[in-house]
Length: 115
Length: 113
Image 1: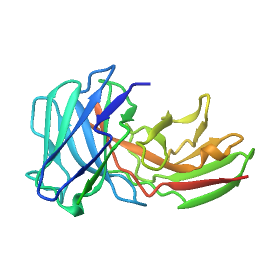
Image 2: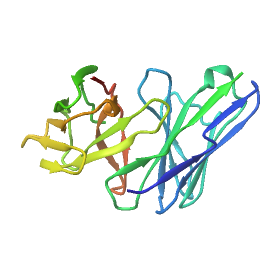
Image 3: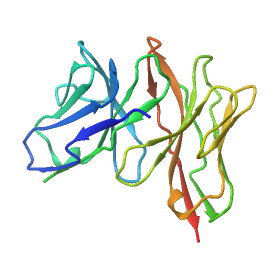
Image 4: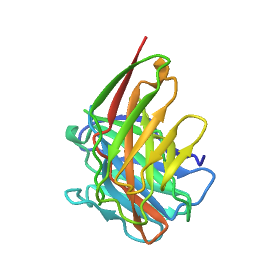
């Protein structure tokens, strides 16, 4: 199947700093990627839909100015957590579909810990 | 968005067949049904996908009745390494090319020796 990578796999930062997470589709092009957040013992929650060349669509309750999404190419989407706080500590996962394919593939996730 | 309902947890023993059923009463005509497996601190891994009737691959089978309001993931002869959370998802289409998925609570499968 198609491969989606994320970088970094984990990050620890001080409160108030910004953190950028990259999501790449390695062997296919994706006009749309999705960003999820998962807290311990909970399910994945969709945060936003990242669209190549246009603005991201955010789910209700997700602050677009805090979670900046950039989808500059067909293989890369980035999520920047601005002015991170301890409550932003979570597991962030991205996913993508090959164009005109039904199956969605997920990245390995990025563990963020804000001290 | 089509919602799904699954059992919160299931226990099984090594070598047994495990069937996990998912309800999706509001599934739309164009929606596919997809099952994922997730281990702790990893992204979900694709298991199987189907639209109707039965689909089988090297790791699982997916049974979908004619009304498509439910589906059953069948794992033959599970092993300890199959202990994971299993998610049933129904896709909502966005412009026909990418599908927004809504994750339910998932089923924690625990395989015992």
